[in-house]
Image (cartoon, rainbow, N blue to C red; front, side, top):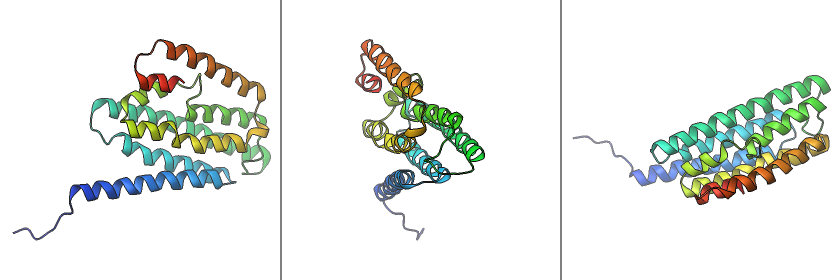
Length: 192
């Protein structure tokens, strides 16, 4: 007879869920408390990699599609953040979040807007929220926005004010007009 004892599946799922939620917390804390671009980028990546398994927990095609769209968009935004931070270090000689050159600040604003789902970089958010389970969608719409918002606030003194006003105005207008035609609650929340 087989003498190996397997733990119950619920225990494995609870352990995996605990590790993923702890990783989400650690990634956010690393990003929020760092003064160095590489550490901030690392925290954002930990956040992204921790939520993708939560998205694919339900093995249906919509959840897999949502996770794929989310991962590709977040990977692109992270690559832009990394490029922006390297360019900033090359131009200013510092890796500090609080000193940005003009060009790297514009790239950083674009990348953070992609991570936050601000218009016109919101193309991924309605479809991703629609394909996720409710609790995972709640985490994506709230917790996942904390770290990018912190980076935006930390580097706000070097941001282009006209670009920020344009992104804010576009988010208000496109969000309002985009939400009018929606009949699904999650898409309405994504546009709001």
